[in-house]
Image 1 (cartoon, protein in one colour):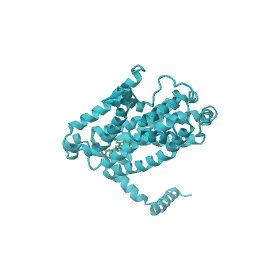
Image 2 (cartoon, rainbow, N blue to C red):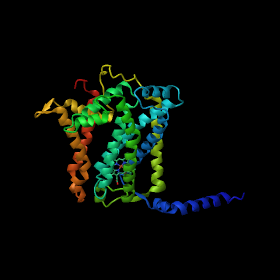
Image 3 (cartoon, rainbow, N blue to C red):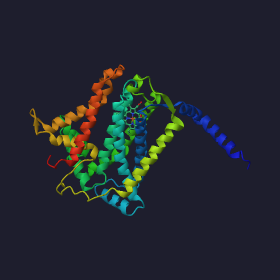
Image 4 (cartoon, rainbow, N blue to C red):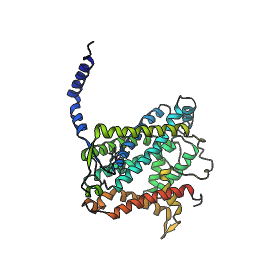
Length: 367
Ligand code: HEM
């Protein structure tokens, strides 16, 4: 074979694919894509990091599906089998649960950074809306996935979590029954959560993610107003390969952290759920729900004649709606004027979530 043969072969393959899928257009697009370089550029890596961790969730989730059985009789035992008998089964499960936590963390940091850098201003409102949709989907993944091992902690946390939906005015009891598949948390709830976790949420996630990434590609990265006021970014970095290689360094570091966490602190299974046993002390939801859980604990039984929990649930609903509508409410930012009020609102949201989460883990169980 001559030396030029592999190149000629590669050239022919390229031409063959190019004629059929339009590779040169993609290449042109990749070459044109740039990322503004300024002192806040570091925050641009958070979305990609979240995407990377989401990819890990999909891959490990599919592997778990090969062994998991979604029924009250078999779910716990199938995971016991996976952890004890299947080679590296424990590791895959541990990676799935650690990556879920890390993904929610990077997702929150991504959200807070786009909030404080006002990246939601026109024309990126829909990017923001799809992001809030992704946040809801990610929290839904966490909530439904937590029950799947059918262990004691998960069972009682789900009981408490679904109980809270019951206090929503008018639709509450319907919502609770819809989620539980009946009046109580039973095997029917498990089957339902399984369907939501492996079919409904992945479908929604792919739709929203497709829209989100399409819009990011369409509009390019935004330059924060503070940088714009100083005359814009000093320079632009080519996305391919400069930015992508930096992304890769971040992803490999995340993978190393993830592997260490999963191997040194493997996810436990605990005791099998027993619906007739008394609830163990100190039941807590996953850490990213703790700020809401703790807020409900602080509310008095009645506020102006309305049950405290109802006020709390409605309050969080309105809070979520406010977060969703921020791009439409922050008129000053939309007009290109400084908007201190929304900066302070952003900081207040972050501090509130951090403080209530801290109290959730440190305050006495009765408070
Ligand atoms: C699974 C969840 C998510 C994934 C995988 C994701 C992914 C990404 C990626 C890759 C980018 C481009 C790079 C970057 O700016 O970091 C981006 C940008 C953006 N994201 Fe997300 N995102 C998610 C959730 C969210 C959430 C919760 C919000 C806020 C509500 C949000 C709002 C935005 C906005 C406004 C931009 C444009 C930033 C700019 O132009 O400066 N995203 N996202």
